[in-house]
Length: 197
Image (cartoon, rainbow, N blue to C red; front, side, top):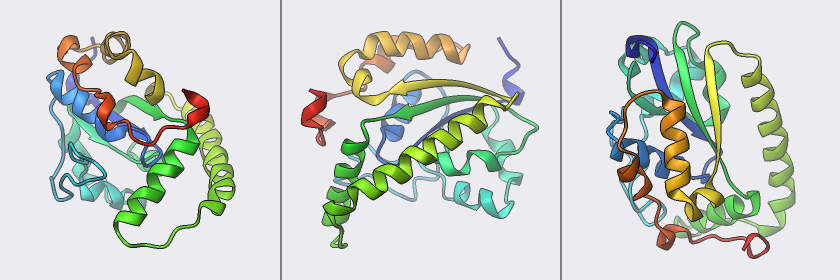
């Protein structure tokens, strides 16, 4: 096992890809979460967002706070991963989800907030997200201070025990696998792509 003083556990992925659920799983497993709870639970994330507002300042060079994340879990959106300081080792759980479900979930969230959205834009956003993921994965593959495991949200929902055990092995630190497996709940899986059933 690595020295936890220099390891940061990171959960990342596209918005609406299951990152908050993974944060909840790791918290249930016994890991300490770094969050400010400014963004509270709502109808779009019933269990909470598990975010730290200061993460958004990474792109502006605000990284001094990252030392507080050593040995803990933090959520970092995929577009900000490259701004994490290089003097730490990161164990990254990267969430993946059917893109049509992500887009449907985003539309529903915008609707609840009274913001305009157009389903006809799905093809454009799907193309943009696909290119972004290719770029991020290519960048991650070249980093020596990142260990990465990719977790498919759609499969995790159906096989939580199997994935919880796999993730626990990847983290290389003691966690409660049974508690982790108990977090995914089908009732929260609301935006399903009919083609993926």
